[in-house]
Image (cartoon, rainbow, N blue to C red; front, top):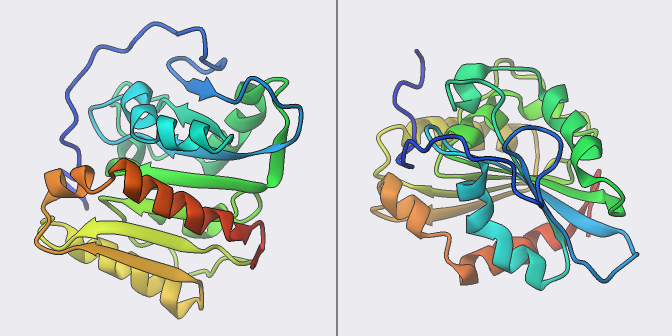
Length: 224
């Protein structure tokens, strides 16, 4: 396996029962503001290896809901609990958006894709396949260069929150170089001396707000 142990220090949890806020995919979590009929931005989050959607949702929920946005945390459909090992089509992720958001009005120009650890690696492997749906991507504690060097067909800004003591940091650097070579807008937020645990800890509420501000500056296929 090319990425070996990547990147997941989350606990091995039993798959939870569907909570009231969950969408139709098993284990998925969807939360949205309750008092708005206006279209809202949506953050789609992919969890790390050996963890599940509730843990991924918890990293972002307070910051996302505080600004009136919606959050969808997807559960990997594989019993491996690993997005990159599952290796399914990007279209499965995209299709879950309509399936899971129900009657909530989503701003289709402001949907953002976030991956932690192995989820970030899955996103990177398919970098050119997200441009029809997502205004930007966030790679947190992971990242792997794509299967091929095809550049995104439209603007796909990328925000990296990564530590240089992660043993697989070089792969995140390679993914960054892909985005740079494709003339994409790249923000490289380095956790100096950060191993995988420190990469996770770096996503404080303050940092989440910084990243959400960065997202807000980008709409589908264009940047402000």
